[in-house]
View 1: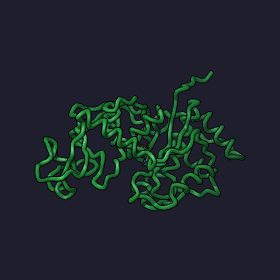
View 2 (view 1 turned 180 degrees about the vertical axis):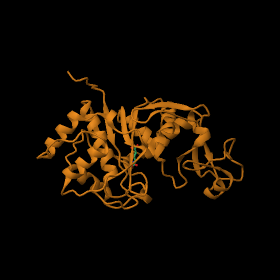
View 3 (view 1 turned 135 degrees about the vertical axis):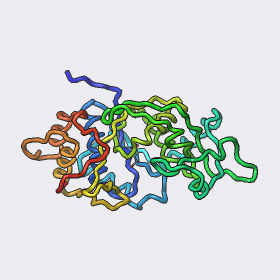
View 4 (view 1 turned 30 degrees about the vertical axis):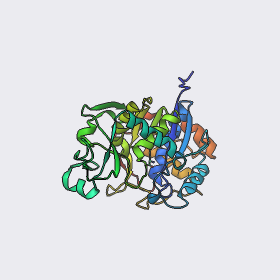
Length: 303
Ligand code: GLU
């Protein structure tokens, strides 16, 4: 009997910043197959909390593409735009616990005073000890811990990061009032009961921040697996913003097979006749251990 984990719940959480491209397709394929291979649930969450970055129509377009590729999700799609009350409640909890503080610094001030980090300037801590009296609060930041946060990624192996040293006190509510991705993702993964997160390695650096917030909010920590990110021949990430070629809804099978090849999964001897056949075959032969332990991978010509 195959070992089943009835409590497995996975998810695909695209931001509607453009059409699904080959890179996001590989992430969708991997998290879907991992859920199916473990007899788990699989959810789709639309991360539409950042209207300035969104492309009108992209959310529906992504869902139509997923349907055309034969993905089946087990619950209604959750839209982050409908969840602001939950993010507000989480922020209030953190405030009551003394985990966050108001910050009055502008981006320009931070750029002048902070040191460079892997994802932009590290906040220099100006408002940590209290908002200077002449300043107004612009953002809400969380106090970050010095001791490293460690986790074992199912693909990338052991990782550790001192969030204070490598990221700094990060923003949970932005100056425009929008809740930060880091907060929303943790609140929703917890609320939806997500147990396994399979996603692109561009989010590897964010994971310790998310584990830290889970601890503060008393949420269980899911298991993480970060896939190599598809890059083009000159090392640029394929992204919706960079207008990478969208996948074609009319010809799903070649793109799905290319995704399997990218993920170093075995390929069927003959091209499956139907999408059903493809998914049955692919979930029966899925093995996450075959996914290369790399953070980027060039897409093969013709993918
Ligand atoms: N919405 C994020 C993105 O499209 C992914 C979030 C996640 O998987 O945690 O990059």
